[in-house]
Image (cartoon, rainbow, N blue to C red):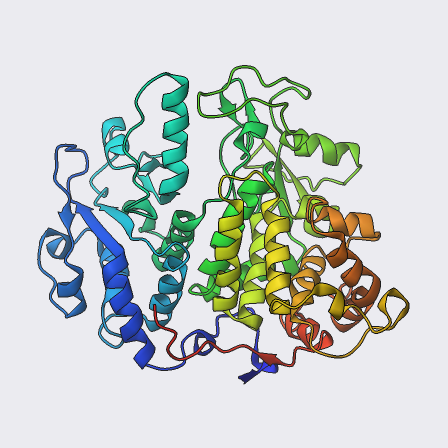
Length: 499
């Protein structure tokens, strides 16, 4: 165990990886679970991808077109970091994190690497290699879960009275496609951090509630433009959850990104909200074959709701994104703040940092099984899973304050309350009523959790880590909150967990 006073939002790799012997076990696991395919000429769609030899790479032998190319250094370094021995190009901390993520579904992941540096990809190439285009038709990093994709294809085939294609999820957890071009100049961020973000998507089977954000065959889960910025409040909270958990794990290997996100929150920077072009009250209309049709969610019109609530805008001149409005983070009511993926990521990454990444991923694995093929509040279910994990299987009622609701809070360790406290903190304590606090979790978190935190420990948390006009958020606040809840030591990962 390590003293929790040493913790902060900057990456502390020693807490994730504590002995050099762990890297070998993680490498062996990744050699078996990661399958790399390289396409040197992606616009030649008849190309046969080169299958990288993980065993050879792991032992230091780098032969073939992928390794002789001078155009894909970022992709080469990524593969080395995942498969080579630490000290010889391998990254022990990255290997630890990736192996634990892959254990969510325990199935191989297909990773297609493209040399897209020679120019734009054709539509046929993008389709052939399952690539997502950026504005220049280069391959933007993207990934999908095999079970979710298989289900969509089966449902669509059934509605069209066609035979469904063979399922892939018996073999693969999911797949991702990465190109080199967007990593040149760091347009797509740190390749290792981006890889981890996309890897989480391959393991995530949560329902996206797409039927609530479809109008006339157009999806509005990211708004009218289909784009999502990391400082944007996006309409669909299910999508916010998916991006937020991916960012949270990414922060375990990208300390700079973690610090940047915290500083964005700390300086009360702006959050973007799209002025959705769809007229308010528009009905669903026709929908694609794989989605049910319901009345559209009012959250498609987040900007209209904020305008009605009188939340002040921040005017920018010039505004490089005229289709968006800007609001100070701490001007927003809590239920709107959590529409941003950074906020979700900060809560869960700090939970992982203080209570252990393995504990977080174990809860995420439980959550994934609960949410698979189930339309529910992803956020509420995960907070409930983290709370129950903290209880260690013991009944929640036994941890109410002594004397029940007439008693007083105690000073014993309460790790089950840490995620609830961090949710309060990263919504800037803007909840002034229990109802507003419950809205952070879409009003779907079991009321026992809300009552326990709000009635008994809210004041203690806010006193330990105050935020105000002259008291901005500080990194040490997260540790102060843990200590206020009786958690005085951070959880170090075991030196050898095994795959």
